[in-house]
Length: 509
Image 1 (spheres, one colour):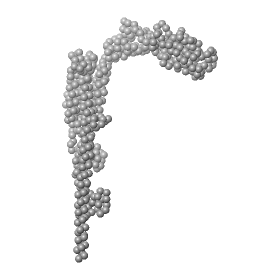
Image 2 (cartoon, rainbow, N blue to C red; image 1 turned 135 degrees about the horizontal axis):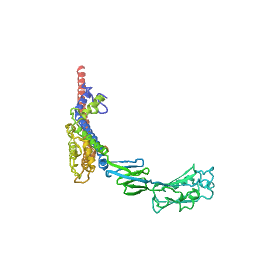
Image 3 (spheres, helix red, strand yellow; image 1 turned 60 degrees about the vertical axis):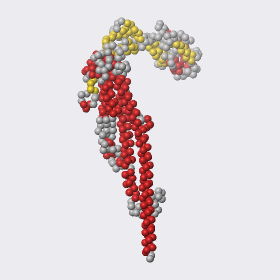
Image 4 (cartoon, rainbow, N blue to C red; image 1 turned 90 degrees about the horizontal axis):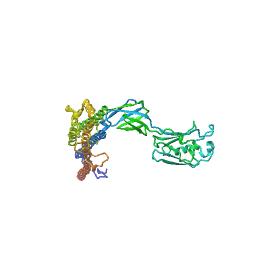
């Protein structure tokens, strides 16, 4: 500073007047910045409001994910199946299986076809073939001769007419390599057992696919399997279908040991001792659990929404600016902001409307085909009588169990029915929830959205623009104050200089 003048900004301090210009202008600017502070607080409040909406939308989204399970018949019409011979046969009942007793008698299991070398493939048991060395170099161990360039066999799992597999053999292929080629994409497992010195070939699938013939047919082979592996068609065993009688009235077969009849999925582990009884009943426990979980999640959702729309607003607690936080401790800031954030969504019309809509969805009647089960209260679900619960649902479990036991189809239709003129409760509720989520997104957006895509984002962007403009105005105001005080200082300085000059002149007379 030269002669009281700032060389950078040409601002003159109070050297001439003795006034603390910096402090005076700083105090003046504090008053000027009051509107900016309010703008900052409004922006913070708007950001908090946006985040509060998004937090609630997350809860709506979590509840929305439950609708898929509530649309499945298995959530209501759960059946349990108990076998009288569970060591031989087990069963699972689908939602469409009629409750009752079924008899199953299993006389034969489905088996894989298997063929094993009739004798060890090595001519000298004390000098067995090395399964990892080139096969062409060990033909003397297999009785001599030349290694063929290919082998052939036929399977029937994928083609009733037979599927011929041509396997090419290279001179460098080991026994292990050849067996790997045989097993690759042919439906066959082939391996060599070192201890017995035998090759094993078996079908990966159970069942009789070539009635009256072999499942693995070597008729098209030129002698490789017979001469080198000691395997012929005559050695095959297995390849059978499971055979069983259903309800004493019909003999059935299955290529696997798991099959489905009349909605019953049966698994055969052994032949039965006479008839096994399969008892199918409505599994009310699981259905009650599914419905109870859904109702509980709904209650949690409306508790959260109600909490926001009824939360007390503390208007005296404004959002803290960064400048204000500097003079406060962490605990003081936390307590202050807890009050400041309270009531952001109080009496919010959009959320209040959503609550009303969801309550109305629950109270609709649905034509289920059963006049006794056409309303939520008919299955024991009613609105809580406690005013403080704000519309939560309560379940009379005994009544719900009775409805599920008597007519689970009607309960299912009460909740889920796609008929546009007779929608189920879940269908209506889902529409309301998705509409609410869309409304919240339009107002508060998603974290991946830009400000221009939602209402509060546009408002925040506008606030930032106004704050930037106001900040520029403050800079102009501060410069004006400095110009005014600088002009005053210059005038005083000039007067002081003139006074000193006059004093000097009068003093010399």
